[in-house]
Image 1 (cartoon, protein in one colour):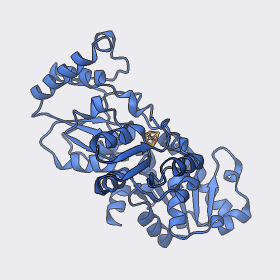
Image 2 (cartoon, protein in one colour; image 1 turned 45 degrees about the vertical axis):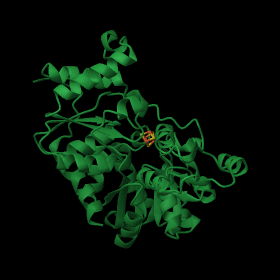
Image 3 (cartoon, helix red, strand yellow; image 1 turned 30 degrees about the vertical axis):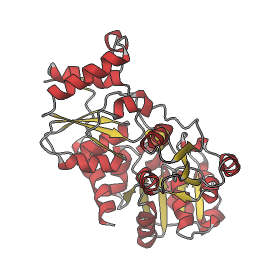
Image 4 (spheres, protein in one colour; image 1 turned 120 degrees about the vertical axis):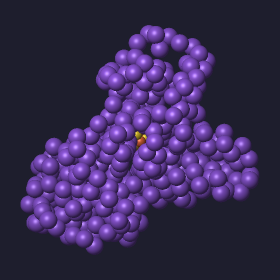
Amino acid sequence: MSYVQQIDIGAKYLGLTPEKTIERIGARKKELADRILILGHHYQQDDVYQFADLSGDSLKLSREAAKIIDKEFLIFCGVHFMAEAADILAAERQIVILPHLDAGCPMAEMSTRGAVEAAWPELAQAAKVSQDRIIPVTYVNSSATVKAFVGEHGGSVCTSSNANKVLEWALDSGDLVFFFPDQHLGRNASFQLGLSEDEVVLWKRGEPMGGCSAKELENARVVLWDGYCEVHMRSFPEHVHQWRVQDANATIIVHPECRNEVLRLADLSGSTEMIISAVADGKPGSSWVIGTEINLVHRLARLHPDKTIHSLSESCLCPTMDAVKPANLLWVLDNLAEGRVVNRIQVPPDIARQARKSLDQMLAI
Ligand code: SF4
C-alpha cells in the first residue's frame, strides 16, 4: 500500500457526469465492501450521504465506527477534526481517510493549541486563580492537539448533547472553567445551568488579558473562547420573529451553536441528534422551523413528507462540509482499489493518548 496526500483530484474525476460518478461509487463500494466503512455526517450533501454505512453526529460516528474493527479503512465524510477523533478511537490497524483535505471546521481552527496554551497562564494570572484550579472544557469540534491540551490539564471534551452535564462537572471540579472554541455553546449551557451574565465572560483572542477587566474576571465562573460557527451565526432573532408571523403553529427548534438571543426565542434547542428525534417524534401534520445546517434540514423535509419543515435561515450551508463531493469519494475508492491510501488522517500517538484522556473523561461524566 502506498500513501498520498492530495487536494486536487484532477479533471479525470471533476469532469465526470454526476450520474457516472454515482454509478462508479456504487460499483467500487460493492467491490471494497469487506474492507471499508463509509461514515457520513448529518451535514453532508445527499449525493455523498446516500453511500454512508453509518450516519450521525461527529462523536456518535467515531464511537460506532470504533466498534466495527473488521473494516480496514474508515472513510470519514465530514471535516478534519472528526476524522482525527475517529483515528483516536479506532483500532490500531484501522486507517482513517478524509475524502477532501480542505474540509476543515473554521470554528475548530479558531482555537489552536498554541493560542490556548498562551492564554492559559495569562488567564490564571488575570483571574488570580491557580492554574490547577482552572478546568478546561473543549467542544468536540476542536483539533486533536487542543483535546490533548485539555487531557493534560484534567479537563473534558463535551458535545452539543452533553455540554450542560460536562459544564456542571467542570464547575464542581475547580474554581474557573475555560471553555473553547464555541462561545455560543458555552454561553447557552452556562445560562441553562442558571449562571448569571456577569459569571460568564468572553476571552477575546489577541487582546491583553483577553480584553477582560480585573473586575469581570473576579466574578467569572466560566470564561469563553471567542470562537463561533459561522454557519449557525447566520440565524438571527429576526428570523424567529418572521417565522412566528408566517407559521404561528410551527415549533421552532435550534442548535445550541446559535447565539443565545435566538435560543431564548426558540421553542426548543438541542444537538443534531436531538433535532432529528424531535422531528421524527412530531405528530403528522405538525410544522417545524429548524435552525441548523441546511443539508440536514432539507433531508428531514424529504424524510418526513407528512410534516411541514422549513429552515430558520436558508443561508446556513456549511461550505467545508460541502467540500466533500461524490467525486472525492470516488477518487478515494478508486485509489484504494489500486492499492493507494489517499488523504490518511493520523494523529501522532502521544497526542492521541492525551486527547483520549479528555474523551474518556467526558464518557465518565
Ligand atoms: S457547521 Fe459550523 S461547526 Fe459544523 S463543521 Fe461547519 S463551521 Fe464547523
